[in-house]
Structures are given as structure tokens and as C-alpha cells.
Length: 436
Image (cartoon, rainbow, N blue to C red):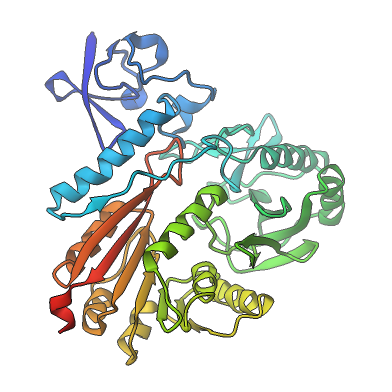
């Protein structure tokens, strides 16, 4: 059966004639349909190809599902994302202006945080990636969006685990030791933190394995064990044991140093992260007399950058580990005009009786709560800079704010290249009629 793609839904679902839906077929392309799992169209199926089609370089692209757009040229990915976010605002009847999406010069190997999951193949530990929407692990250590050096470290870790006869965790049997390997890399220093995630406390020859990894990769400056005692979907839990080094690495943005531990929230794409924060602070246009509130403040990245211009910064973070990192980072940089609070943002804001000149918010994908936004509407900060990795929940929240706030400008940022995801900054300004 020959099919032709008419349009894309949500940038990934190819809609053909008679509402027939497949994946990986671009608008205007025709293909021979072969009935495969998930209705995947492979390159050999394509009869008439789009000018926007790229040669897929990854051997597991069609099986993995971690990337969405390796079959699409980068300039078309950018156009699609810009069109997507503009359409979202149009459908939600929110009138605003859009800056061009902030593109990248590095569309491959940009992830400085990588996670590999352990599985067993022919009685050996293999590290790889979860197949989309399944428990199956695909052994593969050359991911094209992960940092190249991190990939090389993963290969050494895998070989070392097998040398010392480690076993991979089996989720159904609840047996085996190694669950995951996580690597973080500092953009500023290129040093790496390696986390070995285990099922239980047992990790025989941990020190010996660490020495072999470090000998081959001197840029690995610290190795920790993260210890699970129960079945969980989380990669990292609270209990950790230091195997080598300090347990953290350092990074730097605009002269401000940050300590990164295994569980620190930190953007995975440092090149685009710096552009994102520069643009957010440009929108905030902080003056020397301003009080800034940074909600969902993490390890204090935005808070400490904003403190260089503000009179004071009030920062709220509910995660204990991130809060501790933020306090350390403040002392590390000798900054004394930031006040970090370990609290739920909704609880804190309901009991706050001061004023806010600039509100910076960067919530999780779920967005902000209705109660939080209702309190913001009562406090009436003069400006709001809202950063989000999920435009749909961001727009939902902007809808609640738009009666009192002018939606001045939207800035898309291509943070997650070769995937359907994107970051977005919205600048909102209190309407003059509301101030009165």
C-alpha cells in the first residue's frame, strides 16, 4: 500500500490520507507501508523523499525512540519548533510577539548528563538505553546526542564491570547488582562525576574498579555509589557512598561557580543553558534596587546570577539536596544578598507579605499550581520571567496570568536538539491599569 504524508501532529505523528497515521514520514513524502510495530517508516520504504530528509546516522534510531528528529535536517527542525510554539499560542488565543528560536552550533553530542542502564547479554553486563515505552534495554554506547567523552567512559565502565564479574540488575527477578551508570560533565573544567547505581549496598572491588576507570580517564575526578533498597523508577535516590574523590564537580557561568553533585538539577545542554540564562536575565532587566524572587531555584543558578544586579534575591527550593548545594554555592562565590529557603513554593508564597519587582520561575514540566498563580496575582510582581521545558503547561499558566499581565515576548530555545522537546522563556509585564 502506498501512502502520502499530509501533515505532522505534535511534530512526530505523520498523518496520511484517510487519517492513517505512521511515524518518520515527512509532509509531502510518499512511501510503501509495511506493517511494523509502531507503524515505523524506514528509509527503504520512502518512494519520494522530502528535501528536508536527512540520512540517519544512528544504527538504533528507529528502535530506540530517544531521539525524534535524526531523520530531519536541522534547519527544518528549527522551523518546525518555531511553528509549533506559535501555533500553541494562536490556538490558545494569546497574542504576543516571538523572537526567533535560539539555535545551536552543536546539534550532536550536546548532553553533559548521561544515563546508561545495565542489562545482561550472554552472561555479560551491557550498558545501554531504554527502548521507548518499554522495559527493554538496547545495548549501545555511541549515542549521538551524548557527550563523546562520556560515551568513552561508559565503554570503560562496562569493560571494568565485566572484568570484576559484576551482574546486571534484573527488574522482574529483583536480582543482580548494577542498575545504572550516570555521568555528569562540567562544561567549564571538563571534569566528570561517575555514579554507579546499585541494587543494595554490595559493590565488591569498588575501589579497584574506580582506580581502573580513573587511570584510563583522568578527567573522571570523582566516583560515587548510589544505593537502592527497593524497586523504583527513579535513577537516583538519597543514599550514597563515596568511592573516590569529593563526590562533586564544579562548573562556572559568567564567573559564578557551581558545585554539582549527582542529584543537582542542572541543564543537560550547557551551551544552550548559558544562552537561555542570558536571555532570561535580559528580559528581567534587573536594577540595583530590585527585589527578585526565584521560585523552583534548584542549586541557585539563576538566583546567584541575578544577585549580581539585584538589591536582594529570595530563592525557594523544595529539594533538600539542591537547597544544600545552593547554600554551598552562595558561600563559594562570597555572595551575601541571596536568601535561600528550603520550602514548597506554594507554601512559601502564601505566607509571603513583601513585594516582588521581578519574579523568575522555572518549574518542572508540570508547571505551576493554580494556588501559586492566584497568590502571584495578589502580590503583583512588576515583571515575570517564566522558563519552561513544557510549552503546553507554560501556556496553561500564562492563561491564568494574562488578564493582569501583558504577554510581551516569547523566546523559544532549542535546548534538546534532535528531539521534539524545546525550552521556552515568556516575559510578562504587569499591566499599567492593574498597577493603579
